[in-house]
Length: 394
Image 1: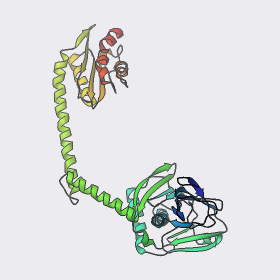
Image 2: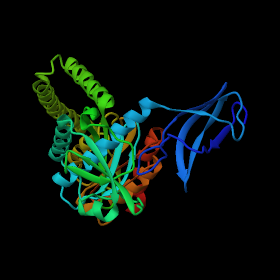
Image 3: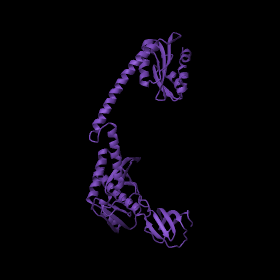
Image 4: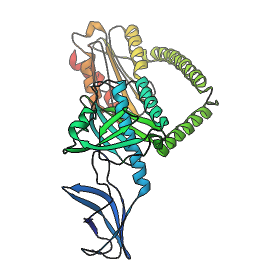
């Protein structure tokens, strides 16, 4: 094997932990004189431990003796997350019920992920209860105890088996907080619960029918997460010229002011629409005794156009109306037909034609319809369809 080669190395004995039970395999390096093989992952096939990696320098031959070096920092962080997973499992059964069973997990040096059976989303107060229970066990700093025993004795002690794992006649029972958490596990763990430092849940969601997933961080990663949240809180407070203590009051005032401004804007838009209605009504065409009006009013949203079409129907009497607007880079269309004409002409039919012309779709009732599209350049052409539509329908 030469420098740069990727390979899988099998040793006659190894301190590297192979991926199992949701815990990732160890990484590190193997040293043989000037040769160094970087181990990026460790897995297990049958009784063989497979060290996956690349030869960083030198060369290696079959049978060469090597020194093994496990990345202690990564392993330690992974072990803390693994122990926290056991505490979380026990807390879930306390908070949600004993129907909770592990359905999968992933534990590495950065975070933990835990899948479990449950029938609904976890409420915010339940998330808080889970964190409180786990962190209380962490602060107790109880010893993480292991015992080798037969499978029946382990079951009699109440030890829970992990999802998807196969166990022999002899098993390893891992206990934390006395009988708070008792599980069968062959993974690497903290020496004491206090080593975990802190657990913070960062997400919860569904991954399958009846299966929920929690992701969490511990120790230094949990502190980094909380520090980042603190910085975001400070930044949010500065944006509203407040502090952490009065941020909620400041945000409430901003939202209330925003609601007032939106209400004022709606009133102004209504007045503008009314004025526009007066101007537009005079430009309606007479087609076979029907007032036909097609107009473009850029900047108006669908709500404003609907109100304006209603107003124009009242003003014009016997009429067919199509209004269009480019609003927030999209085409908005509203069509109206007075009820005395809906037996011959339907607003929904006009809207289907107009919306298709601007690359969209629409529909609605015989007397009122709305739609839209994405081709603003085709809006004038869409509006021009109104007169032919009336001529062909009468």
